[in-house]
Length: 423
Image (cartoon, rainbow, N blue to C red; front, side, top):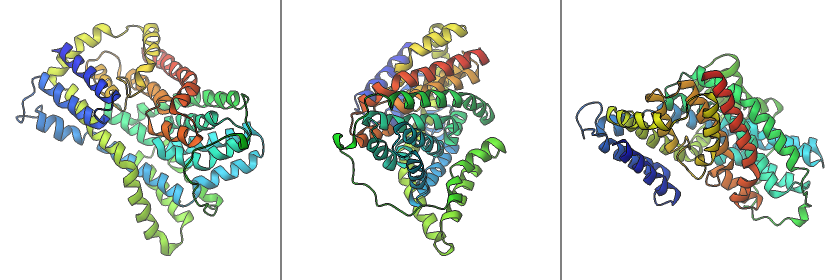
């Protein structure tokens, strides 16, 4: 039975890689297939396919969905009010004609954007102004796009919706997730700075020599007030410094951004307009989280757990050293929507590791967080990588080749830290 479930998972990976099915649809297919193989009844009892997997599983990550929506709302608001654009322009003006200074400034803004919202919206917030500015001072296009992506990756350990997702998906307390992410942040930051310094010294080109195929530039909005520029920091300060829960922290950021940039009579209109736009931005990840919840419910069924645990336990590396060696070598499996991508089948793999008691819960959180640092930057199928590469005028595969050596180092550091602390 366990072998049949693993074969079905392999089929699901193929369906996702070949894009026969979208990731969310493939995960629902896997959830139903695993439930059938595990012997779950169709409609009777809490472990049934209809009630336990589809109904309960669909809402299992509800807190994550709300956090994603609020993060998207805050990101949309930062775009509409000019907060993100103002941050980039001020830093570009400060950097002048120095490629490294401009790139480091855009990298810093990308961290802030990545801490608020993930995926393509974060890349757009920092990159619409930042990428052309870097190229204009001589940064190579592939390095310009990579700088934005590395900044988003460095901001990911501070992204509150990601904390909520790992907490909901793996059953870990938010405080434990926060502790792991805070330790991962300095590694991502240092490696990101190294990427910027190395890449800005390699083969700089003049702007007139670079042919770009970018969308038409947006109309510049007026600069946001200086105190409004604190908006992306507020949720992080509340969550980290004052232990405020994730949803209230994000709501506080939205409210602060509105009040500091909008006239009183326009508050309602701007709030509703940016919220409606946020639904468009948040819809794809929310659909994915519905499917992931179903998959997690399926692998937690007694039949699936009993079938998979002996197999996964037998093939999982034991001991801290082998944990690091094996899982670092498996880093490529989180690319191309592979089986270790936590925002796909990797969530099911993590669920098996947790429910089977193969590794301590914090170790699984650290493992998946480390893989996420690679996927979020170097996967040429992820929306932020595709957008940043295309906006820079290069192919996503070139962005992967540029960033993967660095993100692999971040994953290595995260896994060494995880093994030292929890194994």
